[in-house]
Every structure is written in C-alpha cells, then in structure tokens.
Image (cartoon, rainbow, N blue to C red):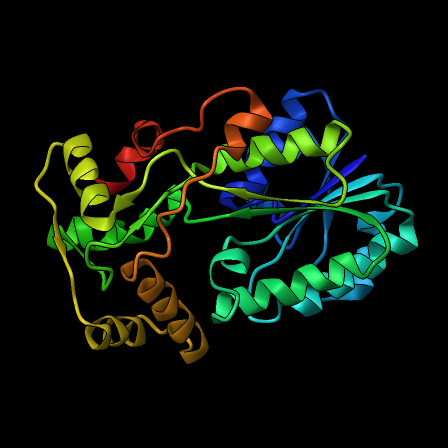
Length: 282
C-alpha cells in the first residue's frame, strides 16, 4: 500500500493518478475527500490532516511506502508528525517533495522551511528519497486573473530566468522512485528542460491563447502592495519576494537532466504544459 498526501494538489493528484495507472494499491490522505472527484472512487481515501497527529494512525496503517508533500509555514512540524506516524506504522520508504531552494538558496525562507522538513524525515531512521523541484510550470496559473482582467502579468523578476517543470514529470519521478529500488538515501534536483524568463513564458501563453498579453516588470514595492491587497500573510509575502529576487539575480536558471535520466524520456517543455492548461488563461 502506498500513501499519497497532498492528493488534491497539482503534484499529488498526478502522483495518485499515475500510481493507479501503474496498478498500485493506493490510499489518499485528504482534508476534503470531495475534492478528489473521480479519482476518489479508484483509491482508498482517509480524511485527515498532517497538522493533526490524531488523524494519522488510520492513514498510515498498513502502508509500505508514502509520498509526502507539505504546505504552509511550519513544514518541519508537519514532517515530524508524518515521520512519527510512518515509523509507528512500519513504513519502509518515504518519498518527500521538497524544493530546489534547499540547494540553490538555503538561506531563503522557503529554503529554510524545506531544509528543516528534510531534516525531520532524514532523522526518522526510515529509508527516504527527497525530490527537489524548481519552479512549477503550474505556478503561472497564478497569472490567470490578471491576464483575463488586464491582459498583463505583473512580477518583479526582470530578465531573470527559471526552468519550469511540469508537475506531471515531478509525479512520474515520484512514482518511479516509489515502485522501483535503488533510490533510498538520494536527493534529486528536478527542473524543466529550458530556462525561460517570465516575459518569455508570458509570450508563450499569449501565443497559446491567441491574445496579446504583456509582461510588466514591477518594483518589489508594487508587488508587495498587490499581495497585501490579495490578503497574503506577511510571512508569505516576504518568502515570495525573496524567491522573485533570486530569479531576478539569475539564480533560478539552473537546468538538470535528472528527469530524463530517471524516466528515460525528455522532460516536458513549458509549451507541452500549455497544451493541457492554456484554456485557464482565456
């Protein structure tokens, strides 16, 4: 039995779907089972929350391997809760979704959160594999509102580039290391196959939807103002601005071939991702 957490998100849902396609016995840990939709009929479902240890015994009971994904500002606590429940249940292998900031910029807030979470998993004594993806192609869905309402994307990243990875490729790597041996004790940094600036991604979105879309390189103050108006907490605003500054400084453009090396096929491009998600921007 393989447990998948974060099963209603971009990566977790893809992991769930691909494990089902691979014929694996799967259980999903979710806060809201209704969000699983049709997938919920193909897997076992346990309602619970990694932030509530009392809900985890049922989720981890009988589980051999687990895919763990943590969100929020207390990743270390969530990781500790999951590790304790996994160890108690006799789980043999944990695959954790972390972040490339652990390698690229561990001094950043996002990097620190993931460094601390990784440490909890590694200290559990269980076999582990850490996946460290960079920017997700799906992060651009955050632009959909301003593209639809204003025909533009506003972001303080200048000409800085990132190598966006398709969540389906992250999921495929997760499935690979969950169901095949030899990945224990390893960390894999994952990226897409091409480094693109925000302006270049916006141009591709524009071409995909057949409408003009502008990229506006705003100041950090302007970006902050927008996030404050959107109701984001200050801690997350600072973390996001740090990430934008990292990209603007040219620290996010590193490309790895890990996806291709592990899967035997090239990583999907941003254009590939757009073929499935372009309608979100129309």
